[in-house]
Image (tube, rainbow, N blue to C red; front, side):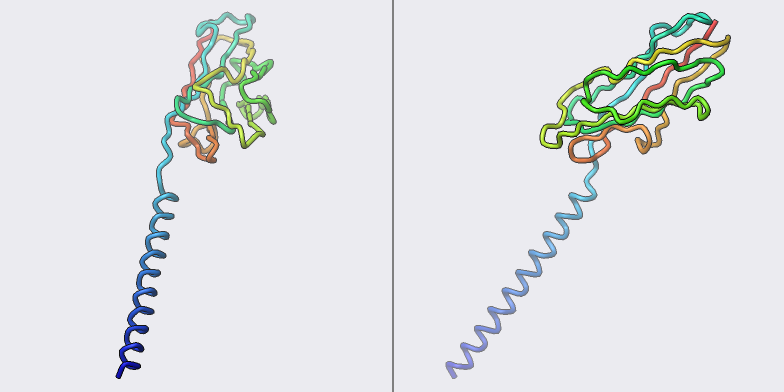
Length: 181
């Protein structure tokens, strides 16, 4: 009889261990799903401002591409901005030193856009900045009319601001309308 009690005790113990292990596995899977589906706090803004909103034909203007990200460690950004190249010509893009490496500064008049991409190559030391100027763009008004400089922004899938966890934190991208007289 004692051998039967020991056998029942071992069987019960083994089932208890298997049961508790299963609960721990289920808990870990649930925890991973929660982390995976956790919403990234999107609180950053990218914007364009101009030295004047009513420039004269033939007088260059300066556009400022800036951002604010109050609570982020930053890794990279992409700014894709549409405009009307028949009204405004983009002559140059000067990037600032807020991101140490700019892989792209591209003016594509034939696609009605310009693209600026910045990245911090040092993953161990992400950029900690609440905001700043990303680039200065020199533009020439070509003819009378209006043009809207608008970020290509689909919930941040095109223009974006990426934090050190590879999450897009860009909540909105604010363009500007310019009327040339």
